[in-house]
Image 1 (tube, helix red, strand yellow):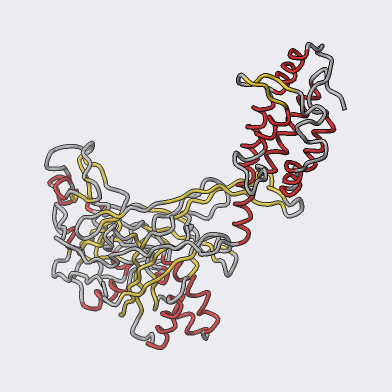
Image 2: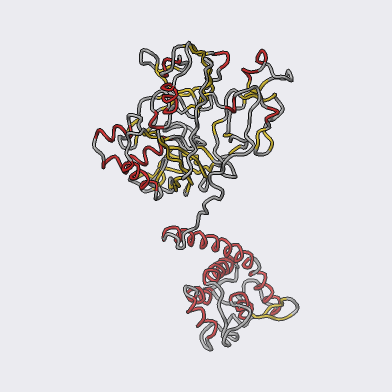
Length: 511
């Protein structure tokens, strides 16, 4: 058997759902399933192959695409948390990003399955641990989506859904194992597929799925520990789908069901979790056969009638059970990490990827994204202009009343610019160029001595006319080339509209 060791870096968020149901909340897996790698490769190589070769690669298990599990922060390979590990309830065995080996027990190795401190055991269920006890953490993102009604061109009724996804930038380690019958020329084609970004998971036609794959030069193969002892421990590094002697799925397989010597499963020493699911085949546009599996991380202990032979070790190394081409059935025989009552962590572990790949932003944004951002920016600006204009306009009627009091006029007498004069300003506000002409013109209705614009009121201890009051609001503080510089045309439009509304509400308003 030969191996390709891969480090996968997510360039986009990637969706790997625990189940493919169309209703209910979707939860993302915290790893990349081997079936996703198989699908990415099959999409490119399957059409180029003869039927027999394609069957060997993608159906017969001669090429096995393993699950990809997260690397630690320092780039070390991790494995599913062993289900046999327990901590004392109320006393966490995890300190920071490391498992404290003094606070963890392999329960079936303890006397009468009781912890040495006589406290209640609590199983460690989730997470991924390296050979030196470091933990890897996966990060997820959640986005709400809605289906679009093709006929109406808008959001479809009762079609809101969400995508739970693995966040971009995270790194995962996987292996592709293949038999010696697979030629180097064929493997070179596989390496070509991995030499450029691949698409993984769901919603690949949208903003999800891109991943970069690096092929490592140093093999990281796990060697099964051969022993003359007839009691063996199998740590499941991926889900295991087993069939009994009648070809029916079984969740408590005998060793002979897995191609090993006859014997029995020691249920009192084993720790199993199970699940069932159906995978979606995008090429067939349909579901594959339902899988009833023993979940990764489970620990199976067997009492065999005879010791394992070299042939058995080859079977174990190539994977056990069904669907091995999609990463199922990967196990570790008699792992040193689980040899005793306490974990036996290594002092150090090899770093596979010391420095994460930096995800660079594109130098030029797609036109649609740039347009959407500009529209959002304009929307925010309009909201700010509207709020500012309303605040200014609230005091406009008080200014007109100030003019009347100064001149001793009745409340029914109009003062200040008329509705039509404000309309001239509003028409000019459609473009910055017209505003520039309006504010710097020596003739026309908008001038210091113009009708209505010259009416004065007291402001901050001095007399001020409507012309100078509005000019100060609508132009920059400093002139340029001895000319007034208009502020935003959108702001002026909004302000004039608010002032005209106040004018219409005033009893003295006239056209």
